[in-house]
Length: 118
Ligand SMILES: [Zn+2]
Image (tube, rainbow, N blue to C red; front, side):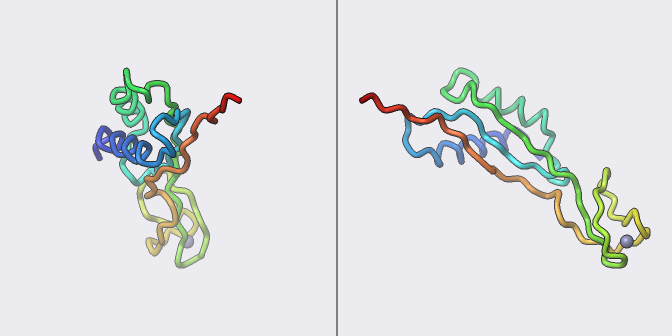
């Protein structure tokens, strides 16, 4: 996965979502699953690099990491997996279903309140 292109994608989606061109973005919250293959540190570094000396320079990129979560089709227990090995830790069945961990999405873009002069 190329973190730089993901950072550029996040930035372009953010720009496209602004209510007005002079809106000031404070933070962007993104959700990244462990299975998405995205390295969080690398993504943050890339985002800082592409926003340096732009109006997005001080925007805080907040990353919520989502662990790999499965449900076993044999014992029906849900488990969090530390590694992407699709084996039920409860009954050792390989008959498992992925519930979470593939996410790669923007959850929230926080924009500074526009203060009107009266
Ligand atoms: Zn099981």
